[in-house]
Amino acid sequence: MTVDHRQHHLDSVRGALSILVYPLRLIVDLPGSTAIWFRESLATRRDLQEENAGLRTQQLVLNAELQKLESLEAENMRLRALLDSSFQVGKRPMLIASLLSVDMDPYRHQVQINKGTLDRLFDGQPLLDSQGIMGQLVQVGPFTSTAMLITDPSHAIPVQVNRTGLRTIALGTGAIDRLELPHIPNNADIRAGDLLVSSGLGGRFPQGYPVAEVIEVEQDPGQAFSSVGARPRALLDRSRDVLLVWPPDLVQAAPQPAVDAVAPEPAATPDSAEAP
Amino acid sequence: MTLTRHQGGVVILTTFAIAMLLTIVPLPDDLRTLRPDWVALTLIFWCLVLPYRVSVGSGFVAGIMLDVLTGTLLGQHALALSIIAYVCVRLHQRIRAYPAWQQTLTVLILLILHQLLTLWVDSTIGRPSRPLSYWLPSLLGMLLWPFAYRFLTALRINFSVQ
Image (cartoon, rainbow over all chains, first blue to last red; front, side, top):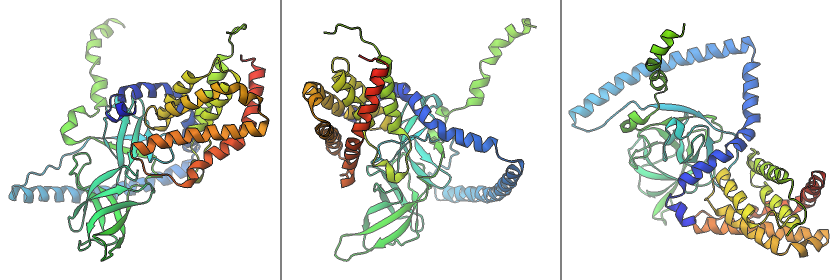
């Protein structure tokens, strides 16, 4: 059975069983979600107005940044075209999901999210929050999915130092606030404060999203590699809303709820004409 | 095998469901690693009291559910719970006759066996080793056993599960 699972033959069984335990998860999640619902519905008008004003200014600032980004992107593409570099900056479809407040095995860094194959999620899909990459889906059920965080001891993510372009791999350590970069040579140009972004080399994570920030570099001349520690940028233990990203070549597989919802309607119109 | 009709299956299922709820209720990070193994405790109780109704098969099903719930390897808890259910059913007459403290120690051994089996599967698939505090849930489970036993017995008599 163990071997079977390693080879992913039992994934469908697990998916089917996850429907069975879905009610249990919902019951456990209920207090948390009710608390949020109460807080939202009992918020005073004044609080809402303040929050609204805050969000509006934030959106204005972000829009201004976005204008700059578009011109930079265009310039970047022009320069890359001059260099004959095949580089795609595609718009990626995204979906927002919420974490279910249920606990998993305390020695694994896994979270449950409230979306599944019904929303066309797939195995290995990257998971982001507003600050950076959080992890990837490891098991997708019809209603809920399990995601492994980048700090899980069995997780590794290909990264790149933003300042120098140095490519390496960041391993999870089992501590929620620490990643390790084990294969950095002693003479490499890396220092505390460097931003690590995803390099996209594994083909799984999108390129150029922030992953972690280097917090310590220890260079021991007696060792072949220096020991480098980094802190994940994503709020792994605090985010409740997460983003799911589809790679550009799978755009047609991404959810298009508006289109799907409208499609059946024309067929119904001849009947509805008779009804009144 | 039995002269009376089986009844109260719903009660047994409910206790298992509640045990699973307690297993995934979110706890603060410091307490997460201390969570006692509720499903194993429930299984041990029913195996001791009603060995002709709850045994290896129930342990296997409960284990599979637990695997799906906690995201462990499918079959890991199922294997461990099946084995402790087997031991329990094999020895139920002896364990039932033990005085309370000896029974509690037996439960501790069963809980440690459960953790040992899951640890064994985990290390086989290359998970990193666990700190010493990994064994605390068994101790906590042992301390909770007398209360769980009384509560479940009261429940059993109240709903006349047999």
